[in-house]
Image (cartoon, rainbow, N blue to C red; front, side, top):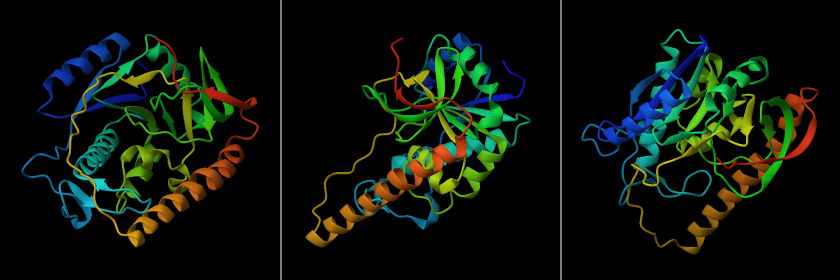
Length: 272
């Protein structure tokens, strides 16, 4: 394992089977990891940030800045990632490798991470897992790493089960997280807001390998008035359009111009 690297995985105390799963994944990849106890949304001492309170079921915010609901499980997951980033910052490691406890790793995961670390000067964070859609997405090629490519994706995707992050980037993510109430993977991918040099490994060398999520909550449908529906729709459209389709498309090529081989259609996931 690269001596610069600190490895951390998030795991609920009430999910020992997932800890066993991650211990196995780490051993197979040749990684030595630190377990970070996850923040449990079901715990009696769970406290949401920002003075949030449940409005119905497990919902904290009915219409978020991008038109969606925000629930207890998402808040606990967000806090867990911030806790993992802080744990990394408290360590002597220069680069953090953060996992959720359902991350299944490709057979060549360890070698791929080593290759990516060889291009450390090009990135602040690298997503190693994401939604495994069919086909690919438009991207700017940055570097070839074995059978994979580092790409500046022009289409953000959900997922935060595995990612690399530098100390400076972790500090930025923690510092800017106050007042951010959205799924952590949305926040991680929104480089037009946090300003970090974000790359994807294509195809992703990690995937969510366990079918049942430990983040279960109640958020039944709510009857919205026409005005509330319009507010949710325009917030979602504005957030998606300006962030994803304007700022992202302008900033990614600018940040990585001259660093790679031009445009490509980068595959999301591989077969392994």
